[in-house]
Structure formats: structure tokens, C-alpha cells
Image 1: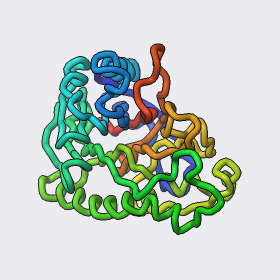
Image 2 (image 1 turned 180 degrees about the vertical axis):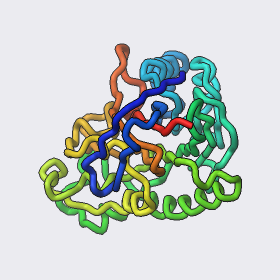
Image 3 (image 1 turned 180 degrees about the horizontal axis):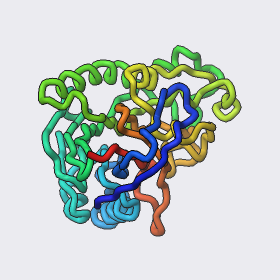
Image 4 (image 1 turned 45 degrees about the vertical axis):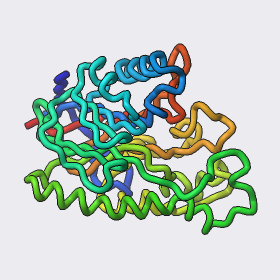
Length: 298
């Protein structure tokens, strides 16, 4: 699907992300990407019906590339139904692409990270990563964030994700340098199992039980120059509208734990939204996150 636009892009008022604008009237290519943990291979609602509902959601979204987690044996069926290329690594993480995959650029542990250089028609290649990060212990289920919880415990639950991501990012840079793609835009998307420091802020603390938390995982990646695509286009925090965890368990703490981050001056997030509905019941415990990017045409 090739989509060009000659557009006047206005810089976004998002100081934490820097300048997100392209040169005025510069030709651009649209790239829609999804991050989605499909929950046990999408088979929670049945071996066939659950996978079909997963396919339905992706197809209706119109995305070009999917960073999938909990693929668990369903990836080939999903990609074949969509007519996408399938690029798995291990059992958990995988990439599904409408565009040709030019090179494997995977790093770190196979269960947690798969990477590919995507040959986007009409634009420069994009390095695309699907990742899954661990958490230390449960702080989302009912009665796990009571007044007895300390700040140290809250941060500790998400410390493993920060530790893994801090190891992963320099490996990504080194790998792209090694294979000659050091200068291409990079998208890292997936299930981070951690919240964002851009959400738990003073002005939104009433939405989060009074908590103001500088979550380390999101700090690691934004300090490395990556832009949180969803927050870049949704400046105001709205806990329920923003959340990706969890449409299947509304009594649990609702949080944004799935992210799409981008790096590169030619890569501009223009729109981002979550998907958590299907006419026959949404198949996953994670909402799907979609971001529409504009890439400078080449």
C-alpha cells in the first residue's frame, strides 16, 4: 500500500520530544504501525475464532507493520491471511510487514527482541523492532496498589523492564552500525510492562491514585532520543482513553504499558490511537496501539 502526501507539517507542541516537524511541503510517505500483545497467540477465545478475530482487528486497522508479542505459534496463520511477510524470533516476539523485509537486525534475547529493516516503498528503509520486557511483580491486579505500597515497591515492579531496555538500546545502535543502517529511522514498539513518566505527572495524579512517579523504563528510551508517539500527539493525559492494559479486566488498574517509540528527524508521528473492540468480543487482554507516521519520501 503506497501512500504519498505533499503536506505542510506543523511542529508539535511537545517540548520533551524536541522538533517533530518535517520541512514544509516536503513529500512524505505514510507508514502505519501497530504494537500488540495478542495474548497467548490470540487463542484465548478459541483456537480458530480467537485467531480470526486477531486477523480481523489488524486487517481493519489498515496498518503496514505490526510489532507482535505473545505470537505463540499463530504468526504464520496471521501473516498469511493478511498477505504480510512474517519475521519471528523465538516463540514470543515477531514482526508482520506489508513491505519487504530487507535484513534481520535482531539483538539481545530472542524471547524479548526481534528486529528487521523494512523496505518502505517510496521512502528510506526503517529499522523496526518488536520487543517484550519483563516486570518484577504484580501491581495491576485488584488490591495490589493499596496504601501500604511504597514508592520503592512501585518502581521495583518495573525495574526489570528498565534494566533490559538499558542493555538492549546500545546493542540496537551497534547492530545497525554494523550492517550499514546507522542513519535510518528506528521504531521500537511492544509490551513494555511498565508505565510512563509522561503519564504519572503532577497534573494527572488524581487519575492515578495520587501517585507521581518517574518511571525509569520510559526515561531510558526517551533519554536515548526516542519519541513516545502516542503522547506526542495526545498531550493531555486521559488514563482511560490512553490505557492499553486492560480491556479484558476492567477491575484491574488501567495503564498505558504498550508503546511505539520512534527516532529520526525524517520520522514524524501524526496520529495515534488504541483499538480495544471487536463486534464478537475483543480477543486480547492488551489493547492494540496504532501510530501513523510520516516519512520523508526518497
